[in-house]
Length: 109
Image (cartoon, rainbow, N blue to C red):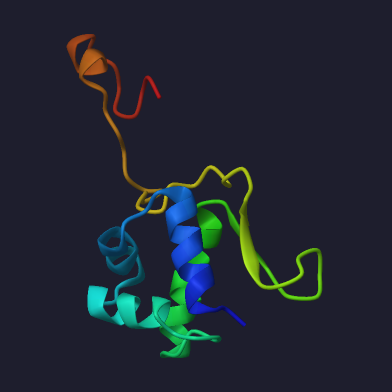
């Protein structure tokens, strides 16, 4: 179960705005606000909640369930997996200094 407070706390923990999370999850900001305001379980479409969970976990958030290590539901931050949320793995990044040196595309990472 993912609560509205966990979503809000996780977003704050990684410094992500509501607008940025809503955009990444392909939902509206009012929908995210409604989910975060939910008492208990985040009340919304399960695919929206799943998308939010995936984005936050990719950013390094671990959701803690009641009865485990935590006395209640919570969040913690671990080292991110290294995958940028908005990075297309097929996208080539070319740095300006490599363009001047006639380097091949993608060089210089």
